[in-house]
Length: 254
Ligand code: G
Ligand code: G
Ligand code: MN
Ligand code: NA
Figure 1 (tube, helix red, strand yellow):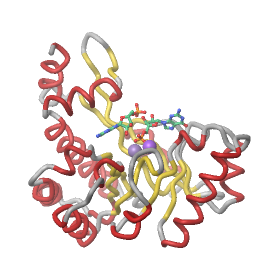
Figure 2 (cartoon, rainbow, N blue to C red):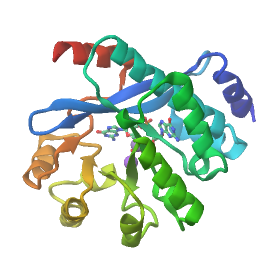
Figure 3 (spheres, rainbow, N blue to C red):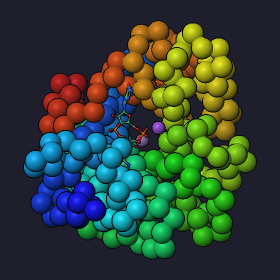
Figure 4 (cartoon, rainbow, N blue to C red):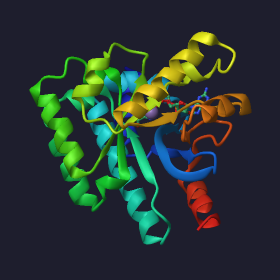
């Protein structure tokens, strides 16, 4: 409850900030996108990991306000990079299943886009399999509306949850993210190698882009490259960085 109360005040006190982890087009290693990751700079505790406070936010209902704040901040960052004359990179924003499935989500997103003047074509929403579980007509209409607005839709934890391959057919996704649990034991683990290879193959046949996450070693990178994985994210290439560091990366390769 203490954490919940502190979290309640964290937004107004500007303690929730975003870092951005680069997503690279390979093999050229060109920066093409960033994933926004929320961090809580607690005045006494220091940094609190989202692994700790996102569950608290979800249980308390604060996730809706926090999710709006994260999306708004990402939209304002897009506008700032644009105004600075930097080339556009996609900003991916994590959306909790509770946020996505709550009545009125689409209207909240529309309002934030209108208020900030952001271009949804430069924004990907990262959804988890639980957000897409048993998609009824309302969820399907919402997904279609988001696509019509221009948002990219990425399935974040592909293969780790409950979704069936039938969803890939029904849902207008644009990207699959290979979960880092399938990347971490590449190339030695035969099962993970099979899963990563099959994911790349099915994505290609369905016309979906793939982002491999959690790439930490040259051997993992090379395995994925050999199987035509074009976009990678992970500590080998870059950790999550403050916005100013992304600005510098973009300036350096104008
Ligand atoms: O950045 P880090 O590895 O600490 O993130 C841990 C987890 O928190 C990841 O699963 C990530 O998806 C989640 N996370 C990070 N930022 C956000 C956010 O803005 N919204 C939601 N819903 N989850 C986030
Ligand atoms: O669940 P999601 O995919 O959104 O989680 C992203 C999280 O993964 C971020 O919190 C980020 O800090 C973390 N992350 C990013 N790159 C790596 C990596 O190469 N290795 C590990 N172990 N974690 C990573
Ligand atoms: Mn993510
Ligand atoms: Na993931």
